[in-house]
Image 1 (cartoon, rainbow, N blue to C red):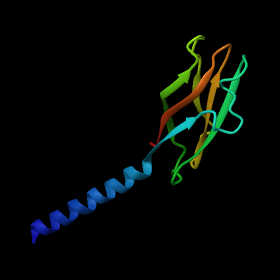
Image 2 (image 1 turned 30 degrees about the horizontal axis):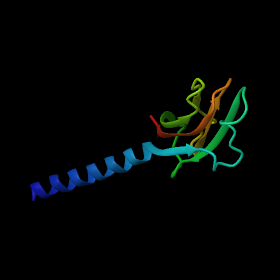
Image 3 (image 1 turned 180 degrees about the horizontal axis):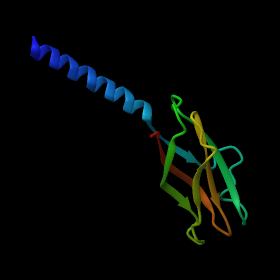
Image 4 (image 1 turned 180 degrees about the vertical axis):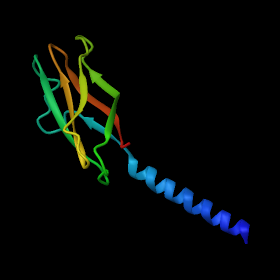
Length: 119
């Protein structure tokens, strides 16, 4: 009987811990390229910016921290590869991903990974 109670408590605790951790961390991927409406990172020169709205599957209880990475970039080899990726307008429901290039850089496509976590 005592073993059953301990086992049941352990299962409930682990289930609760899994539920809580699922609510505090979310992740996904992002990608933009020529098929993205009004794609401009491969055209012209000077500063060019694209934004992508990312919605979380479930709203966080508080504003999360967002971590970004670039996992793929296709750029013109004749020019320097200049890019900046940042999360702006972070809220409990999502964020806006801002991708920027400048000067004569030409980015044909760029993809990455995001992770949001709340304290």
